[in-house]
Image (cartoon, rainbow, N blue to C red; front, side, top):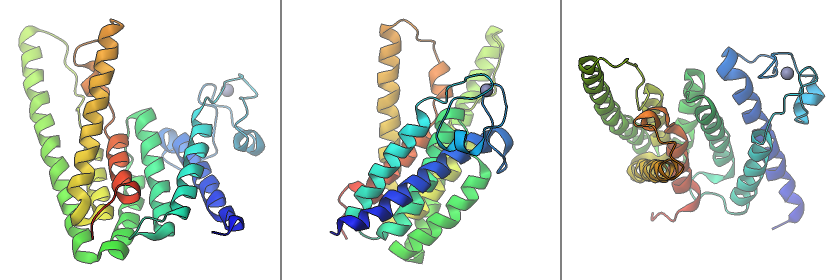
Length: 259
Ligand SMILES: [Zn+2]
């Protein structure tokens, strides 16, 4: 491999990371492509301050590790996939999917939110990548399976919440209308199904659910040890999107698949 060619994945990785950071900064707050503002005092960043992740000039608010983590992870993943492109998707479709999944991952992790505009873009992207990699029928089926599977979980979650609400009403506790699994997770699962295709969709979503379960278990154990565990709070507030994204990513890029 020509070392000079590494400039391509480095540039793509950096550009993707900057786009992910920017969208994760503005979309949850304004739902539009606005100028980025300080999350604390709401004053606008200058372009250079924003690009170089400087502290806010007004209130000295520090932007934390996320912008740097995003750059580091996207550079690493892009170099890896340039070096070993995902068998069926090739580098460029892979890079676009990575960028979309990065946006979903960060926004869901920070805000517990999956936005419809990102879902529409993701749907088109995953449909294109899936069609290219697997053909049209496996792509449509993959999307349908992904959507249907998570919809079943979503519906079970709704039933569970209703039962809980009834029980809480009987015992006189305050009610909440939080759902363990949001409609955004169902749509995301459909989108990941499009990209994975009918061959990989079940493996991808299964891996995502297993990872979420393992993480939940570790989290509960840590909370129990540190005596900060509050019953039921955790299952309600845990974002599932990042785990679904990691499950799909693993099958697209890293795990060996036959055929
Ligand atoms: Zn500020």
